[in-house]
Image 1: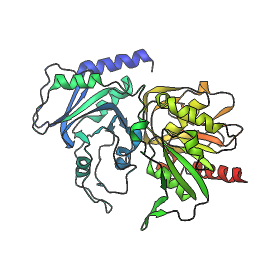
Image 2 (image 1 turned 30 degrees about the horizontal axis):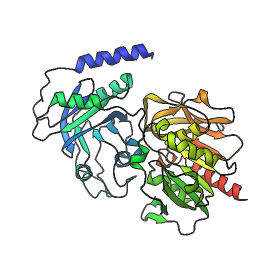
Image 3 (image 1 turned 45 degrees about the horizontal axis):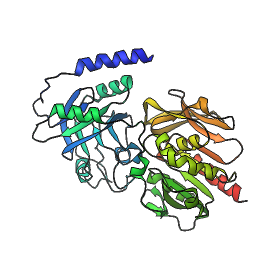
Image 4 (image 1 turned 90 degrees about the vertical axis):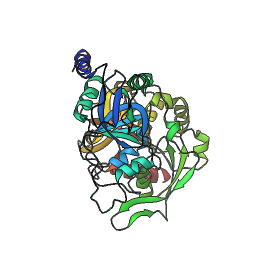
Length: 405
């Protein structure tokens, strides 16, 4: 689809939806108001109040609690395309960080009573406890079509149990939100201080374990790290030291790492790169040091190696994205959450593209040809395959073992 066609379709949708004299329909207690003035009415969820951000969509059928707590969603309102969200309740295990970074959520159907043996509370109760604002009863297909054709808009969710809304003020608030381009959000979700992680992956009947006999020292740079990534590293015998996004090369090297991991995270990689790229270039001076990056870590590593990034038209967010490993020809079903991408045509000659999206042909991975440095755009820890991409953690540990010998 050409940009002109996409713009025309977006304009047609906007003209269809926008009304200057919109009044709340009977029973409406919440509204999603877009920057162009479009209003989607619904029933409020979670906390009362308003929240603003970039409106995106996620196509996953499961894992809503992990999605809402993924730090990579900082600054974003998530529209769930799958209609049944909340049916397995909420618990304290299926979270990727203690404080959700997502701004809010949009659902098609109301949250029903949960039916799952692991549930400890209703999803709506969990949303309220974390101050997350949302609404249900929205035609999420229409919201998704708008994002698909016109890109992710800025928007505001207002939850008012009394049904009173100041639409002009909400439209102004939505229009004033600047968008993610140019935003460094890693600083808002990174850890405040260095800590050690030893929790391993979850097992039925056992829960999470502990790594008591680590063999390798890994420093993980936290740009918004998901807990399950750290668990995958600990599972394979790594003593994981997590450092803040702003850590210098000297801060990292003082831990004498056998390898360095670069985590996922939110925002514009070029903005975070202002302080992350010099650090990574200093680490890359050691040609034997294994480095592995995921998501934002992949983008920052690419920037440090001379490539460029750009914002995508709508981004990749879901648990059903096919990615091809160019070396083996194998196709992995992957979980993804990113709105920026590495421009493959800008990769220097010493970098080799390793993975490609079968949805749109965008870059999904790189490696340095003459050293143990590689990264992927997707999330190998999220298990949509369910284990299609776990080999990447094993590849990192194997590189560490080889470098030590």
